[in-house]
Length: 163
Length: 163
Image (cartoon, rainbow over the protein chains, first blue to last red):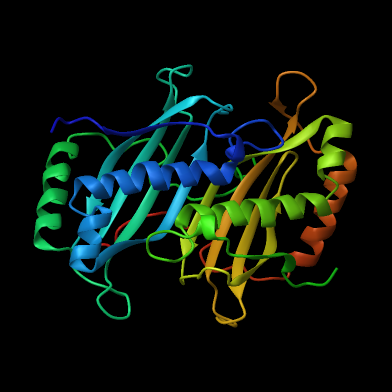
């Protein structure tokens, strides 16, 4: 694993994701970040669908934040990359970016998720990661810790202060 | 208009919004907040689809934040309520909550949006609100300014600090 954000997922913008402005609707940016970013990252840390079912564990999202930087159009291919910002015994903080060939190095959007490990054997409750998952998170963190804290990580929403 | 959050929208959780955890997927919370919350609010301030087309203006989302508080299940009816947090010449900050009959006073989720007015006559660019829209925003703000700053407004994502 190299010290660069992971490329996780590519998809084309579908007609049902486009709104009256003829661009990717704000809600569907999060759908893509979740399905193409978080779910793909889960596959890589031992939390694929089959592994979740077999171990009666899952991941819930606690919180998400998106910054919309550029429009993305119908049928355009988007790519999701990720950087692990941190984790503890049962939570991890994941930063994701959306890219298109047209925009090059410019980002279409950034997002950040706080997620929590869930023991789903009985009533779902938060619980420490399985040891193999914790080991994989530590491996990704070791690769990503050299990366700078990215643009928009830890942002809060607010109007610009009046001068 | 009364000094209480506006009730904007009701919908049932659709099968295509539910994920492997058999609950409303994180991405689709934002789809509901956007389509049922932001779009409905736009209708009430003179920015309905017809008004946007007639005046060549629209609204873009700059930023969004969601806190996931409780699971919501397939076919459950959710209600979206909103509170205007603030606005300036071309932006407004909208806070939305998701409710269900089952949860009563407990919130299913909270979200916050920063949105910007767009002049779409040529290449889309940010521009001051139309005067009639600014007047409606001022009316809502007058009604909502007595409300306290709500739970999770202005939050940033971060792991709990180590003790």
